[in-house]
Structures are given as C-alpha cells and as structure tokens.
Image 1 (cartoon, chains in turn green, brown):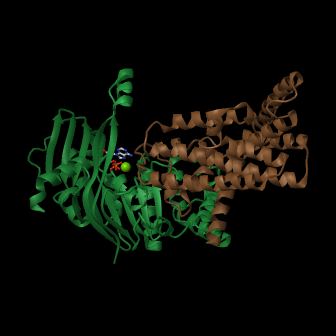
Image 2: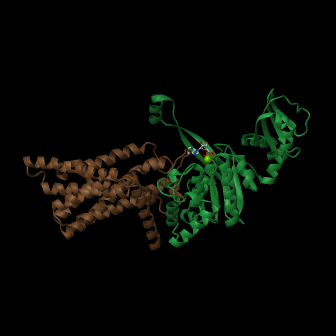
Image 3: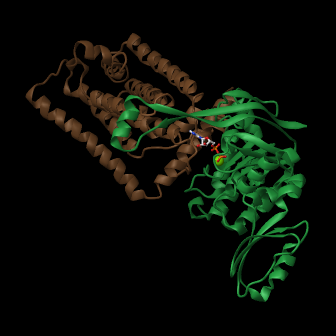
Length: 327
Length: 264
Ligand SMILES: Nc1ncnc2c1ncn2[C@@H]1O[C@H](COP(=O)(O)OP(=O)(O)O)[C@@H](O)[C@H]1O
Ligand SMILES: [Mg+2]
C-alpha cells in the first residue's frame, strides 16, 4: 500500500544576484537581477507502508527541497503530492499529526531545557494527554538509550545525543511516516553507526515508514532496502538496494602506506588507481575478492597505515549516468 | 473547535513559561532589566512635570491626562512585547527559515511563531503602566477599561508589526521599514493628540492607528463614550483579520532556506 505518492513535482527558486562590493549592493537594490534555480524537476515516485527509503544525492541535488514540499513547508510549483491521502498544501494540520520530521541541520529543541521537558512540550503540541506522554517518553527512553542524559539541559549534550533527542521528539506522537533530512550530518563514524542502528530498530518496533535523505553512502548501505538517487533536481535511479549493491556498491577503495613496494598488477578483482611508490590506492571488487583477502596480498606486516572507504557518491552517480542503458 | 483553542492556549502558555524559565536563569539581570525600564519610563513623566510647571494645560491635556496616556501607551507596549515579542522580529524568522519548525506542527503557525519568545524588560513597561494608572486614580470600572485597552491596543501594535514584517515574503528588505514604522508609533504615542494637526492627525487615526490604540482610551476613561469604545474594539478585530490574511497570503511564497540554523 502506497503511503507516499509524488507525481511530476517541480520547484524553482528565484535567487537575487549581487555583484561584489558596495556598488554591487546599490545596483541590486535599484534594479535587482534574478537567477532561477531549478531545485526539483519533474520527479515522481511512490513509497509503500513500512519501507525505509533512502533519498540520496550530492549537496544541492534537491533532497531537502523535496522533503520540504512533502511536509507542507514549501509550496510546489507543479505536480501533486499525496501523503496518507492528505495533500500537504491543503491539509497541513491533519497531516502533521501523522508525520514526524527531523532536520539534521535545524534544531527544534529548546536548548536550555532538558530533553524530558522538551518531550513534554512536544506532547502538548500534539495534544497528547499527560499520562500518555509520560508513558511514551519512558518507552522511547529505553529504545534510544537516553537514560544518562534525559535530565541534562540540551545545550550540554553532544551532537550525537542531541540528534537522538531530536528523533525521539519527532516520535512522541506516534507518526506513521518519519522524514529524516541528513540525520547523520556532522557526526563521527561511531555515532553515525549508532544512529543508524537506532533508526533501524525503531522501524522494526513501530513499523514506521522512513524517508531518509543523505549524501552519505554508508547511511543507505546499512539501512535501506530501496534507494532513490537524485541529482540536479532529477531522479537518476529508483531501485532496490540489492540491485544497487550488485552494480555499484561492491567496490571498496583501499588506500595504504607501505614499508615496501608490492606488485598487484595481475591480481584478479583488484584495480590499481594510484601507485606512487610507497603510497598505494586500489579498488577491490568484492564480488571477486574479499577486502580481507586484498589486505593479505598487501601483507599486513608491510602496512604502516591503511584506510578503507566506499566509492564516493559522486562517482557512483556519474557511473550510473554512463551505464544507464545497461541497467 | 473549543478543544483546539484550549490546546493552542496550552502550547502558548508552555512556550511563555519555558522562555521565562530561561530568563530566570540569571535573576539579577532579570530584575535589573525590569527596574531599569520602570526608571526609564518615569523620566518621561518627570519631563512632563517640568513642562506643566510652566503651563498647566497642553491642548486640553492636564498632567493627570498625560500620565494616563503614558501609562496606557506603556502598558500596551509591555503587553505586546512580553507575550508577542517575536512579532517584532518576524522578518528574521521568515528570512532565516525558522518558520519551518512551526509549519510542521499541528498548531496555528502565526500564533506559535509570535509567542515563541518574550522580552523581559516589557514586564517593566507593564508594571510602570500600572503604577501610572494608580497615580491617575483607581476605580474598578476604570481598571477594567484600562485592562481592556491594554489588550486591544497591544494587539493592534502586534498586528501592525505582523503586517509590516510579512511584507518580507515579497520584499527582501521589508524589516527595516517595519522597524522604522514601529519605532515611530511608539514615539508619537506619548504626546497628547491635540498637538498634532491636519494631515498628521488624520494619519494617526487611520493608517498609523496610534489615535485608536492610545488616544481613544484616554478619552473614554476621562469621560465614558460607548462609540469610541466600540471603534477601539472594532479596529482591533479588523487588524487581527488583516494580519492573519496578509501573513497566510505571504506564507504561500515562503521559501525556507538552505542554511544551518539552531533554536536558541
Ligand atoms: N530557500 C532557498 N532559496 C534559494 N535557493 C535554494 C533554497 N533552498 C534550496 N535552494 C537551491 O536549490 C537547490 C537544491 O537545494 P536542496 O534541496 O537544499 O539540496 P540538498 O538538500 O539535496 O543538498 C540548490 O541549488 C540550492 O542552492
Ligand atoms: Mg539538504
């Protein structure tokens, strides 16, 4: 059953152009020049109940703009949106009881209050009786492991703890759909991992549909069954995670600083990207060879420093463009 | 409908309570802010006492009338800035994309936004206004009228600010105009209306409704006049309607922002 239906959605922004310096400012005031930014261009997709969808793309791709239109914040220029049979434009209040929002770059909590008081405030915003809020807070406190800091003012919390609280605040009213805009932005890898597993647990526990944006490949690898990739305001791929994994995420980048040179020229499943004497950068095709195996080839005793990473999203997207016909 | 109103009020109440709690974290600053404002306003009265020692009547206003006028102006200013402080900074909220947080909540966007912060020194204005009223002379009926005019006048002030700041949905530098206009209204409102003549006076009772919000109350309280009272309340309702209409019209053009912001 589809809970989100987006058809032919478009949004443009008019941005004022300004030349440098005082003269430029004056000019802009007298005769403003505008530039049109096509933030979202004719996109369509549907999301089913209980799905975790990753909506990914590089910075400026149009992810936030799309989420903002789905949550009533922005009015679309063209196209239609249906969320749980509501039109975000017309049924803002009714829709807001059914959805939760977390914007990684915008905080909704009062910083001088404790998370507990903040949650009570959100309870009031959603007209939830006192008793029910307290029960819900208890439950979410367990699920998101907030015990340690639920009574510490928000301004004294770490970024990771804050994001956890932001997510809990957005769940107080039992939303059917949760919109998360870059929930892991600015977090260190360990905390990122923690947030991901909490989101996953929450989806299991409450069957909440999750629509998540990110520019981090790690987020989707760990969380999602389906991926929509957006670039320059257009959807370039809407596919299952398995498919994407098979085609694009089966490669890892290994960068190593070596004591001695090694020769990997004829090894199967390994492409040499850069070989500058003692600094080596290779791509490992994990369908042919495990990363562990590749490291063995390098000889662990021989490695001074090593870094293993995913292929950057930008590269995946450009390779999707190039291979579009083959998919 | 009634429960919706009650729930909205509960959120507003909580919001003000939490903002007050934040201000009370530093009690010395809190109290000195209030006391300083009372003293500041008192200096206005001293200035008039000096003037009245030269001449005992300014365009029909005696010293007592002027004290009442300053009291009402101060009270309605205090009421507006204590409960609706954010209506005087609405452009900033709009331009920095902070409306997002209120749009996703099932409450009235305008009300939640403008009640999301308080101005502590406004409590000083409110208290000063009350002191001025007691100096003028207390009666129960007079006090009820005084409270009513504080509320209607305060609301008119808030609505004008909302209307002007909402223009930033259309024009990027509307905030400067709004601040100038608001400041002008405050300055004018502590002088007797009779010193203004012709077109200025006409303006004060129409587009710049200082006449409605500040002068009419003095006239009604000095000698009761039901028509003037009705005009005051009616204009207040009209401004509420206008403020909501213009704000919601503008909201359709709201473009949020792609910058980072935090709630402080
Ligand atoms: N409020 C705004 N005003 C003007 N331009 C905007 C605004 N919001 C986004 N944009 C522009 O629209 C494009 C898409 O932005 P956004 O949706 O924030 O991208 P993402 O979230 O994928 O990083 C970008 O070019 C951005 O500069
Ligand atoms: Mg974004």
